[in-house]
Length: 187
Image (cartoon, rainbow, N blue to C red; front, side, top):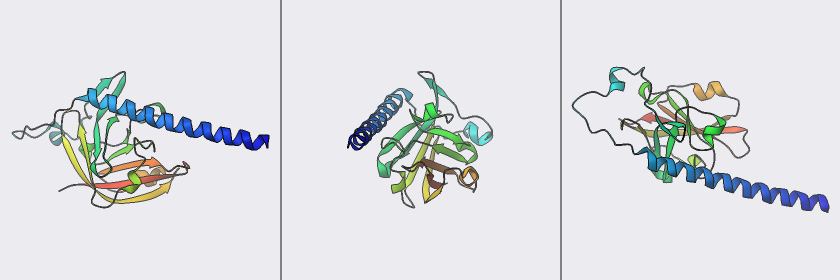
């Protein structure tokens, strides 16, 4: 009976901890969004720098020592988040991160935690849903979801394979697989 009570208490503590980290991550992301202050580019007189040279790095803005490259917006799940320039365990606790690629070469992969306030609902996305990435220079990249797939947790090659303009992914709740959303640049 004592072991059962300890297990129940441990489960409750784990649940409260998960809710706390989810809320904290959402709060941090919203604070960063307010500080990013990205102005969408309206200059149509000249080609953006990334068109002339797609090998350039996406511009970065540093906030509280963390480097951000833009924002990702998913209207169908009412989500807008900052995106950090590089994935790490610590970075991903604050905001989704660039896992690989760049919007300029149409191979951007963004990883986010499965927190409800981050990528916890991307498994609800359907073909045709809109995803918008905006870089720090205000260049807007509109994508449409093509499909969602589940890949193995260690299937790095599968994550990186394919000709996808944008990929979003997060862990499932057990952590053994990755919910992966594949997107194409909107025409």
